[in-house]
Length: 159
Image 1 (cartoon, rainbow, N blue to C red):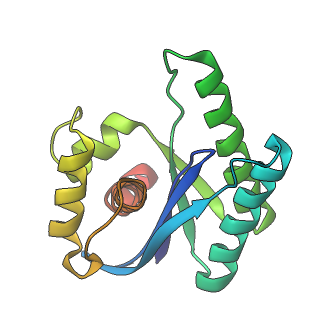
Image 2 (image 1 turned 135 degrees about the vertical axis):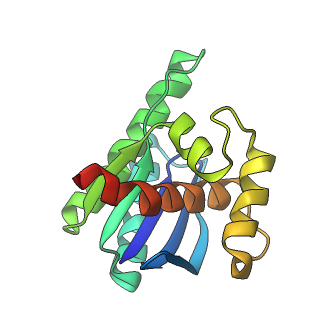
């Protein structure tokens, strides 16, 4: 099963693809989809939609996993994050791939062992679990962590 993890953000959306075969995980690729700050909001969301669509078409994932929205102290930031998530979820649905959502604490607990781990700890554990992934940005490491969480959680959801 090929899993695409997505860490949505209006400026940077991290993505990470892994393959789950039995109990083993294999790194495929990762990166960041950027939107252009100088564009209007609708055009930036379209850039995210097109970027996610391009990744989906190139790698044909079976599942897409994303982080659930959390409410930020800044309502404007929360709204922008929600809009970016909407573009990512729409791209997934448009391309016929099921989306699974996980809380930030579950993702961190699954990958690091602690629900309130910081981004550096997540990056370190992604490298341990996927040694072939190399050095990751915080966004791509988070996306890989989301994919890893789905790989470990999905079969349990079916029970």
